[in-house]
Image (cartoon, rainbow, N blue to C red):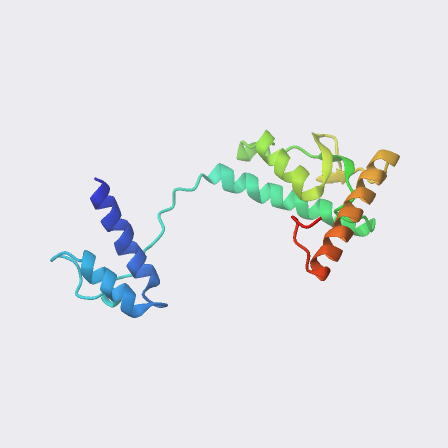
Length: 166
């Protein structure tokens, strides 16, 4: 089974790399070729990807992308940098017909992308998202800290220092 799997992988690899590395791909294909295979790697069809994707995951990620885009637009309208953490993002629940809910993985993605502390589902929203733009002193201090770290990293890069330098 291991040899058959290895042969399959190498045959597919030779097909994929044939346009960029034709001679090596031909050599690899010839070494793996059996009697029923085509004479040359350049005479076989390009491999097709089997669709094993879960439609619910794809729909949920599209919704996450939409939420992030709308919230980033609100940040831009308020001239708030993404490095500045914010407290809450309120999100209208995902469509019931899709059978989706904001699971913890999707909420973490949204929090990371938008730099918010909490994502809350709120069915009563008029818009799909509402970003809380009030910046508390604690959030302001955290944002200033991030700006300081970014500035230090920029200076480190321009002076040619590496992280292990003191």
